[in-house]
Length: 497
Image 1: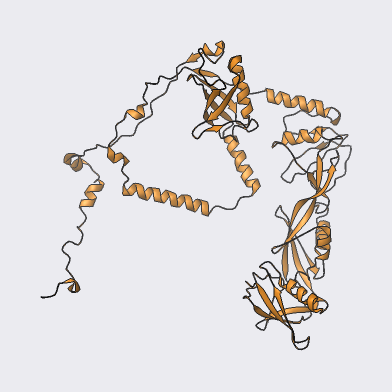
Image 2: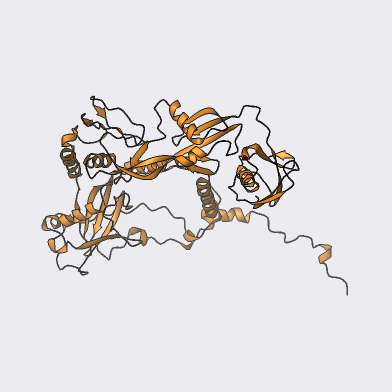
């Protein structure tokens, strides 16, 4: 990779030299343009570079041209292109699709994008895209309600999306830059090239109007009913005079005139239809009870690491490392899909609240409910003088103070033990709970887990002989001893005195 190059001029142009500082991302075409501007040689499209008597591809950067530091290049007149200067261009979109075509070397990136938009026959909108500047909420219902409620003077601001072209390792955006950048200027006069097109927000904000799409080409509105769709590309339609139909949303069909009131009431109905809590109250567990697992006396050999255990641990670490290293790159959409699948796996979460007096209350929540719903539930369970409390989990100690986080985001699904601490900092003389809950308290039944059968700590010779499979110590003793009677080499023998 060259940090600078030296460009020599032949006698036909004038025996001169020019030293150009370069960067890894600098195109060789930029080197030619810089030399022509400094030496006032005219049009840089008429020249090319030669290194070691071989012409260089001006579309390459200094990183990929494999030029050493201080490389001596030669600037010569470029030969006319025999193929007519047609370049095969593939415009690759963010969705993965491609639009191909052949263009002269003097075509600008702006004209290529315009032609690709015409080839799509209205299915692709490269220019004139719009998207909401910010959308609060992660559900389709939340986005839908925001669009309906903010279609007035205080409308949600919309941002215009402008195309961003990536050619090689260079980015071109803005109408002025796209119009001034041609294929010939990029050093591409023949062959094929891929132009990646992405969309970035611009600084112009406009209020949303009812018949303007979120993202995509403009659509014509008719008097027929339209169906609101929210796909992965974010395209949507809304006709002011047509009823809104959303089959995937748990809301009835409404019209835009009464959409604000009707949709809001529907949301309240959905939120009020909470699942049954299945509340259970457990008495304090006696402190002198010892778990059954702690009553088992295991020998010291149980904690000794055997060669087989070490091999198994090494193999597991190797498999985990290979799984991480060989994992494919995941897009944001793929990661969101995995999170949604995990949330569907645990639709409900069982929470057990433990109070300072060691009483416990167990309830069931939806995994999509928030931490604030837990605070609301405990407010209805506790007495009025104990409504100032804080929830936390341990270990490690972590306060549950984000009331907007869902139970899945708070890492409480599918079941968790949550501790309750009060502002008073002292244990109540009576009970924290209301009478209707203290009357249904019961003892917590804990079943003893099945313990594995442990081998005898002091194996005898009879047990070893009757065992059908030889143990590890037996197999070790059958190995031949180390070279105890090996012959001493001559060079190690002591000389005669």
